[in-house]
Image 1 (tube, one colour):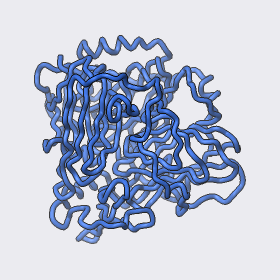
Image 2 (tube, rainbow, N blue to C red):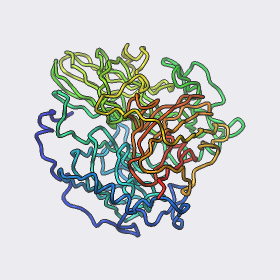
Image 3 (spheres, rainbow, N blue to C red):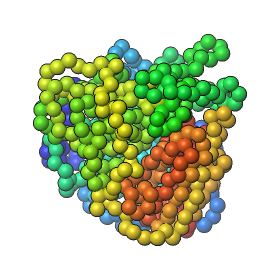
Image 4 (cartoon, rainbow, N blue to C red):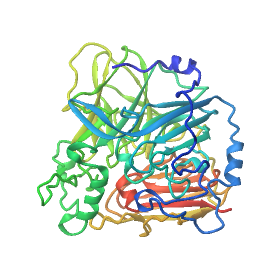
Length: 539
């Protein structure tokens, strides 16, 4: 397995084009601009008429959005990329080949690297049998490029294409994926690394680590079928969490529930976590992956003893939190969701879906497991760090570091450069997370998502969002187009944060990016079932 270039090589390279040119900006009925027409989100509104919201709100392609983009004054290099979403076989290693949908023919998709202060232009060609889209997770970008069908753009029709173009304001570790139905739980995801031209960290090598839970193409399963089963079995004995206990803790026996017809079911039983609670997940995945590989045939990263390595860790899973540790090493956390934090040491980390952490490690001499335990699911993903001789770890390896309490975002403090200035909120929005496994009716405030929802904010305001989780399940909540400070101005800057069962989260942000912005649970099955809503800037 190849190792990535050194930091010095990466920073010395120019931001050359990653593709051989751009496709036609649109095709197959896709619009050439942002979101003048809106056709509905995912499977809930495919192909419908434009879903115009109430009057008085900023249009995603309106003058306020164009002015905000011009104010970013992108003077750095242009990075051009062409990408194709297509049905393809994917080799997961260990003799496991599945047919899925992906960006190209690799899993994860080829990482995109660009430079803060520059511009990214990426053309997505849709060779899938259904419409798709592309969302840039964590970026504060122009609203008509955010990639939410029915809200900020039309779906990209089969055979069509769409060019996403926007300024890159903040360096950091990000990723991209569809915002259409449950497509994210296929192979449609890839890391986006926005490099800092004035990088303050010193390190020798960089390792991008993408975690995932995998079901698509295994014994004919698809994410759409899983969602249908979750909905169809909701209520009565079909509920996916009828039985709980300590089984899902490390060393336990969380498992799939048998289906009445004898066919394999992927509803999870016993997903009990000492951190996330008795309902740590809905889905019992057959595979858990690091960089697209099963633990029986892991990805291997090579370095030298003493190398200082930057790990950029992304949880691209659909329904799984991962507890991650590098055996025999302590990690120094430097960034959360792309923004710098005061350096903190940790033996393990807990990442909800959509969360990212950057850490530094000093490589020891030998062969070491990078193990990502599927929290509450009694399975794990594995990659290997090799700096010398030694016996390779196996899928059963459990580093002692996993037995320690994992670091979570609430214990981090922002670096001075990323701290939100102290200021009383001008507006407070209360959002209550509702729903249950028994009915599979996930929502905010008991109201499933429709594209015309608006929670109003005004440009220039300091906004406080008070989330209250009224469900028995944890939720990783994600805000598009902004980062918020956890617990108020003194907290770490994040765009995705875990809210525990019965818990509360205060998130402050400055309303400095006009448009219509999605807020949703990043459990793909919860969001597609209705746990989404919109923050709308008043015109």
